[in-house]
Length: 359
Image 1 (cartoon, rainbow, N blue to C red):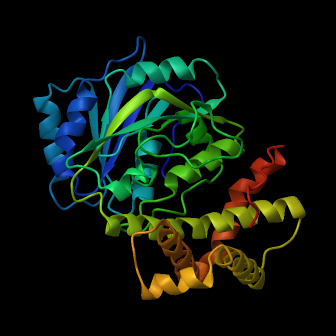
Image 2: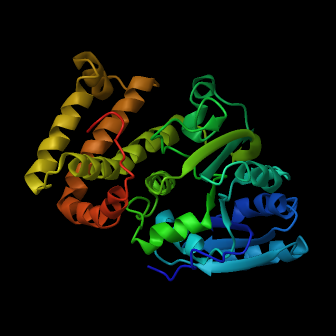
């Protein structure tokens, strides 16, 4: 783990962390919006671009674009050669200098008042550890009818229905546009926290949820505001059925690890020792329950009559979860031991956390 800043004496301001892999074609517009941000009074600001093993000349291009934009605030270029967004996020967050860390993807266009709005909300309650905004689609081409009802799957809209505090125990945040407090991140890292998800090429899912779960265990709150707005650029080749299927399959990968998180929390509350056989048994029971939420006809139709249907997307997730368990269960005990190393001390500090929905 990289050295992290001390939890106290963190200068007031925003560290904008932008992780990108071969995002050169998307950076110009994204950086232009960043350059137009209104900076809150008495707040410093920096932009950290983490080049995650790109091969398209991202770093020198980003530097050139920033100079063309008259470099309105400090740009720091970081390199993370380990493929996987989880590694890149850790690198960026660890290096962040200021009190608030704002995550921006290379296809996010922040509204100019984003930092000012964020500051107003964060000043309302010191217990807010994570702040979420509203994602508005910037579509290159008309949205297909089937996709209109599934915009949230493309990170369009909001992570929860109503503005305000997230429902209790809900850690399903969106990384795009997310603001976290640096002292909370530094506290988690000091305790040994690191991502399990998003550390393989092409599987960027879950590191935002892991961050939120960690903050909840620290006793922090998550807040969503529909006044905190950004646009999510969606090129014409982004919204198609195959991409949506990949998203649901990716959730299967992500939720393999959240099954382990749930198991760790359950074992702490019920005081039992986790064994390899127990992991397999509980996962089998978990999959049986999920399987029963589909009819035999739906299972057969998935294989014999593929179609654009929500239940088939859910089955993509279900089968993907099983596939990833078979692939990753050989390291499950090691991963559980790692989770216990930083989660158990937090839980002992009277921060119990009941997993919603059981395991």
